[in-house]
Image 1 (tube, protein in one colour):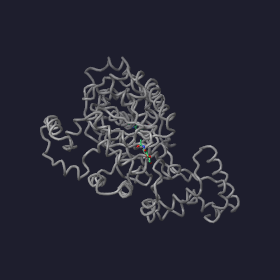
Image 2 (cartoon, rainbow, N blue to C red):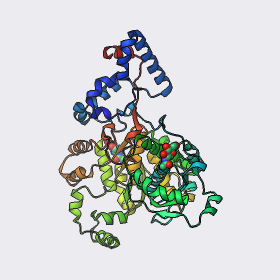
Image 3 (cartoon, rainbow, N blue to C red):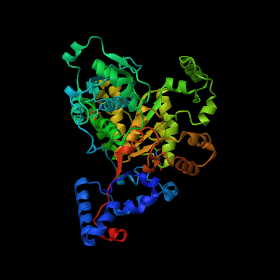
Length: 512
Ligand SMILES: *[C@@H]1O[C@H](CO)[C@@H](O)[C@H](O)[C@H]1NC(C)=O
Ligand SMILES: *[C@@H]1O[C@H](CO)[C@@H](O)[C@H](O)[C@H]1NC(C)=O
């Protein structure tokens, strides 16, 4: 009811007037048969019910201004011109994450009648594994298979051999998905015994469409009863039908919940930040030596840096010879902690803003972080906030990453200097959670400003930073159907709230 895809309005402005009366065409048909007053009454009543029970209520004025501003003619100019509230998108309250199962979505195939058991080895770091697990559920659904709780790959460079149940709440995962896909903890002994050979192992090509699984994997599954898919990350196509996309959101945003110890320490840190500050920014920095070496960038550390990064660079045999200056000018270099700080101050965050800094190893260590600390003296890390409690997590890089994930997810503003898995997955999740402010640096256009920083006054610098960051602030209009990966732009799972009817009488009648 009146709950449409937010961006569909920008794509189909012709529908605007019709969509605005909430229920579209249907209403016009009824009008011919049912008296006018009954229609109005019914509509107000239903809208009332909706706002009572869903809590998805937005004020009419915001709603209208959003509608008009998102029409194709106005969207660009208007959102581009409006001053942005750096802490919170003005339009965030008009949208919400929606991933409910459609009525026609068939119930899960039960274990006994399924086409066999699907074993999955997810690979990579925590967040890459998250995409693998999400897609594993969807693939099991496509194949009518029973999914065995995915294994986390222990052989990748990511030094952590935690299994699924040490990181995610496995019972919750199974029960939350029960209506969609049958998930079991292991292949039953009986099925194991009846297997003549070890499970058939397949590495599926990247981003395979559902047809690939039906044509290539299903026949083997039917024959062998158990199939294992290895190196399972980004192995399923980005574009799927809406119901399967919503299933992805149910897995990614609901079924995957961290275990209690991880959840608790994450919440402890969030509470400590909130007690100090009320609201805070989480900054996710990636500035590891190997990442910098791979980028071919130069950060002003003289011969020492050139030598150190050059040595690491030898690890990859086929890297092209890059000009560090060109790379920087093209916006290919990860922002330094200092540059992230300059951008934030330029955007208007005051020097007393509280920062939670999530990072792994930082090239240059404290020395590299110092300029950011000077810009934002209220600078915190998980080590500072959860020192003792953190001890038992230290040997496990995935669990440490999970703690950062929680704090970054809960922060009022999230900023990254990279485009890695965590940055993209959290950007998508924060859209789903009501478009919480998520800032991605527009490195290509910021870099010339950093280079010329000394040549202009602070006011001018700040104005220019604000201007180049338009479109990179996590505003709803940045998401367009068909743009990017669903992890980052979960378009099928963002809906528009129906609007409040308190004073809808006046607002409604002229439109009807
Ligand atoms: C899966 O089961 C549904 C019925 O629930 C059926 O329509 C569909 O064809 C089955 N697909 C496969 C691949 O077995
Ligand atoms: C923060 O900024 C204010 C002015 O806006 C200034 O007076 C103060 O000294 C600054 N504090 C620090 C720690 O830099």
